[in-house]
Amino acid sequence: MQVNSQHDRAVLNNKVEMPWMGLGVFQAREGGEVERAVHWALEAGYRCIDTASIYGNERGVGRAVRESSVPRERIFITTKVWNSALRNGNVRKAFEASMERLGLEILDLYLIHWPVDIAFVRAWKVLEQLHRSGAVRAIGVSNFQVHHLEALLRSCEITPAVNQVEFHPYLVQPDLHEFCRANGILLQAWSPLMQGHLTQVDALGRLADKYNRTPAQIVLRWDLQHGVAAIPKSVRRERIEQNFQVFDFELSAADMAALDALDRGRRFGPDPDRFSF
Ligand code: NDP
Image (cartoon, rainbow, N blue to C red; front, top):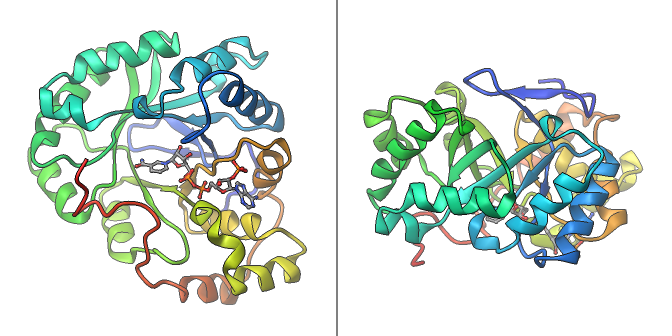
């Protein structure tokens, strides 16, 4: 897998192209904070923004995209349907509300945010309809383990294009990654920077010195060389810019393996088999 330019794209299983790197905006405050972050990201070259209805900042994301000089069709926007809509059977209404807040005609990627019991099978039917109607270019899931995907694949007509999961050197999930690869589902890393804890990982510091990069750039490059898309979050301009400078260097096979070997099944976020929200 060679991703050596910010213009390279991941080709999803329905041929839609998605940027490998996007800006995550979880915990970016609605209004000025998220608008500035999206604006700086687009200036830095990002063409993918990841939000969710539960983040409460879809309006700011939409405003920043509309006010940008980058044409809308060059920007890939993801949002997600929250668990309450799955439980209440209100997925279509939730989608329409997200689109109203974003101020968009068409969405690039709509994800089921969490695998809520078996409600996700019913919700998926609605996502399939949204995709067929042309309202959404690609549909996918988030926080799905292999058994959730197996249950979905048994009944779905459209295979998810993306599975967005927690992924970093402490949580490599080789079985999940292999299952997704075998079924044409692209893995996208949330919390790729370990929610900021990456600065405490000695191996990342050593590789940062070796390659004359930052620990964040090392870990994001590791994602790309694994064929995993990533959505690092920052609301600081210099970090937004720095986190995107990952297309012009290559980690050696030995250094990739050294980072893989840090895996300890450690989550910084909730466990998809044990969440209670
Ligand atoms: P990240 O791993 O992206 O880490 C974000 C934290 O790291 C922030 O505190 C940020 O602070 C800090 N940071 C950013 N850049 C650097 C850097 N270069 N060096 C050191 N620290 C840095 O965590 P997130 O949990 O935010 O995950 C990323 C995105 O993934 C989210 O924003 C969201 O879009 C998505 N996500 C999806 C989930 C899902 O269930 N589908 C769950 C969680 C996240 P600062 O902003 O101050 O720079």
